[in-house]
Length: 413
Image (spheres, rainbow, N blue to C red):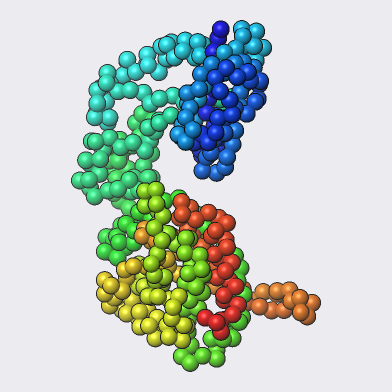
């Protein structure tokens, strides 16, 4: 009798594998089309693998607790010829026959000439694997190399010139699969030769390097409006007056202390949580940004932080920070509202999971339930950028909402 595979289906656009949680059938069981036979778990949810036709379970290849890639064979069904004809499913026999047929891409690879851009001869070069369809025809990428591949020759030329992958992102590749070749790079540099240019300062190089490393992570951003009138009123009554950014620092640290898991580091299969809630503040300087760190912001009240904050910011602007002043932060606060900006997406430092930004305050009519009328209020946008591996949108939103709540009670800061 023909056999039909039970395949791990494509369970979501970004899901490459799933873990078998429970088998609902055993060898010899009779099953029906669309019957749920295996329960699997992805990083999003628990789902079920179903059968494509009627049959008898002939073999179970999956093991509970093990993970399998999309397209993997989890088991086999014995089916009748009539069932195969009725449903049009692929049998193991037909799949093996398809695999044994020579592909057009393999034939084409035999005629490739030697290409130095790959640092291999054409006879040894393998075409990238084709996209293999999974259950019901959904495409499953199977390790294609694509334009991101950089040949050893290209890598050596980039090293000679001090270039990184981000530096060649504007270069249009003419190599196989869109790869950038040495000739493509040389043509691009010749094209730019007559353009005006300047030498990047050490500060700009440091910022560029940090941002390149930061952007290797899956970063996301959420935002919420916050009313600042209570903070501004409280600030006017203080002497010396705390900066608006310091209020934000203090509220952020208190919120993180309540929700410490949002500020962890993702290391391998672990999330390492902070021991102390030290928060950095972004300070604009000539040709860059420096980030001094305030220590134990969750433990010191606002009035005790004013002098420490003012001293750090002053030394940062004068470029007089020590190495210890800039180490150990778990998150950063940036006030880009000082430049008149009302929204933005700040990028966290490579060693931090979070950065909280605030835009410029704007006078707006805001509805008051007490007087049942619109009243003028100062509103600003609050934006949180986070490492999506550590925090999801819901967790980031709850953290941001808590910061807003704390800012409505500045006397408690």
